[in-house]
Image: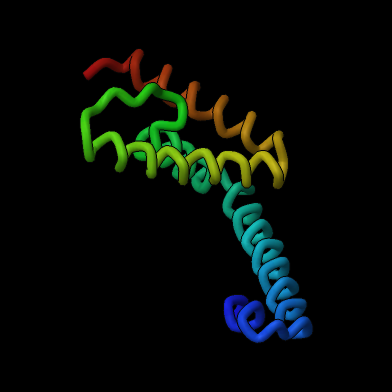
Length: 110
């Protein structure tokens, strides 16, 4: 729709598309807030960001693997930023819970 509005120079269509995008962004933040309010949601998101997206680690791969890892990290950094926008306390809480879980798991051994 946005491309069509720009192509036709239809200002009302472009304004409508901007409102829809803003509304979707607000709805996505509210949906994510709902997930963050539960420890299980925070735990899953933190594992995704730390494990799959390597947000907290260096990337040392070669070739295509590097490009894929950078793409995953971009998603993780975007998600981390979104969480920070929703409420920095959620991010602090997630990271503390993750550290606590890692410490507890490490003390149990293999």
